[in-house]
Amino acid sequence: MDTAPTPAEVTAVPASTGRPYVLLSCATSIDGYIDDATEQRLLLSNDEDLARIDAVRAGCDAILVGAGTVRCDDPRLVIRSEGLRRTRVARGLAPSPMKVTLTARGDLDPAARFFTVGDAEKLVYCASPAVDKTTELLDGLATVIDAGDPPAPDVVLADLAARGVRRLMVEGGGTVHAQFLGAGLADELHLVVAPFFVGDCRAPRFVGDGRFPWHPGRRARVAEVRQIGDVVLVRYALSERCDAG
Ligand SMILES: NC(=O)c1ccc[n+]([C@@H]2O[C@H](COP(=O)([O-])OP(=O)(O)OC[C@H]3O[C@@H](n4cnc5c(N)ncnc54)[C@H](OP(=O)(O)O)[C@@H]3O)[C@@H](O)[C@H]2O)c1
Image 1 (cartoon, rainbow, N blue to C red):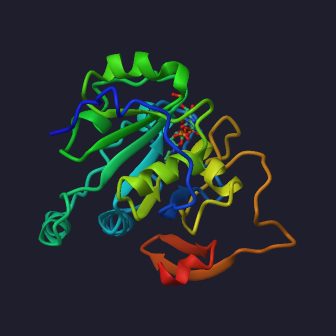
Image 2: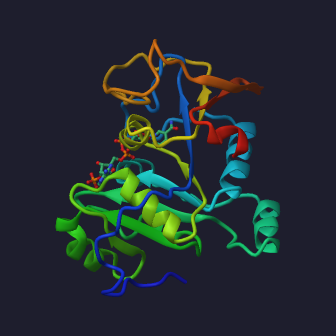
Image 3: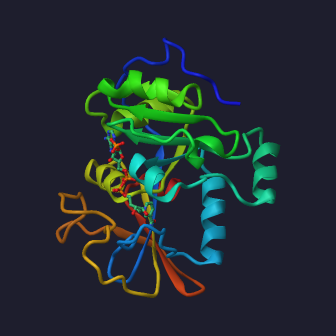
């Protein structure tokens, strides 16, 4: 059962230096698109890879997606495998990790599966001006946290750390991935490449234009390359924490 926000919880979160280990996960087409331009969700991974993602999720304390992904994909963000859920419970954890989203506008549908599926705790980091509206809209379905204006990823991470999140999986979309990458707040990137092209510039790419800590003069380190059925997983180590993680 989720906890409704109390007035004490709906206050600006403090910045601090501690942050969880941050693992970014994304699937793209060969030409770097993370979706197509249609209303329907584009399936990029295959079943074997989705099972791998399930296991990676199960090893995390929280899963974060942007409000755009909640609106577009309506993801459940729960552990699908009964065995993985049981293992988590045996370790004293909730069956599925905490769900986390970020919003500036607060325009979230309370009927979205993010809020309605599973018993995991749900956190909504919200820009200050939209906190009251969002708290009312979600009516106890999630804890709405004032994350400042505009909310900054490092502030969100510090608050998650204070709530006991040691390992965070960020599952997109592109806007959110770009912020964590651009701010140098990612320890590891799992990039899955599906064996087809989208070929439509109206579709979203993994990240848009920006300045990133990894560029031709500072190349990221490949930690692993793995073929999973017809897709390829590349694991990039983006910080020195990656090996220890
Ligand atoms: N292939 C994959 O692995 C994968 C994974 C996930 C998603 N996707 C695709 O990605 C697309 C969605 O990506 P997107 O870039 O549009 O959306 P997104 O990154 O999921 O979410 C962007 C939204 O998040 C909120 N947000 C982000 N940063 C914020 C901040 N610092 N402070 C406050 N709010 C913040 C804003 O919400 P408000 O608008 O509410 O203010 C913003 O519009 C969809 O097509 C989806 O299918 C693909």
